[in-house]
Amino acid sequence: MEPVGPDDLDAVARQLGRRPRGVVGVAHRCACGQPDVVMTEPRLPDGSPFPTVYYLTCPRATGAVSGLEATGVMRELELQLHDPEVSEAYRSSHEAYIADRESIAFVPELAGVSAGGMPTRVKCLHVLVAHSLAVGPGVNPIGDEALRRLRPWGERGRCAVKPEESL
Picture (cartoon, rainbow, N blue to C red):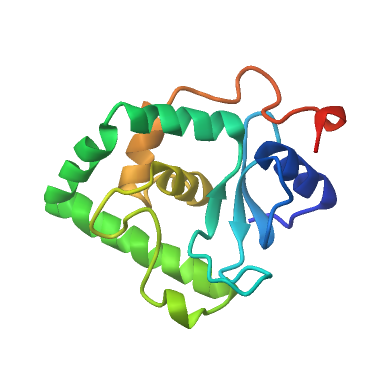
């Protein structure tokens, strides 16, 4: 994770169309150099628990993941959990996700809960892809597989609108 700077927060605000909440760092950058995954606090500034420590922000990336979800691939990926090796790796990614979040802060309401359906379901590819991008290949087998199936999103230039088009 990289520290988050004002330019990064501005880029994420343009990507999301709103000011980001609870960002503690940039977990991954798109090929265009802008953040596409940020790391967030497990308790947002308003006090609400937030289990999604790795948050996919790039609109092209989220669009690509949404397109993949629309093909029904989540059911197919969930069937891979019947393979004991994939299931165990997915359980380990669940534990790693929790450990990463708890390295920022422990939130009792989130104890034992990760995100994206881990460790037994495939519920949100956005979370699983963000996790794989943030930690690299070999940690989250379902996020890794989803990434393999995605079309590249950062090849056509910058992923966020220009500053003059911002909020």
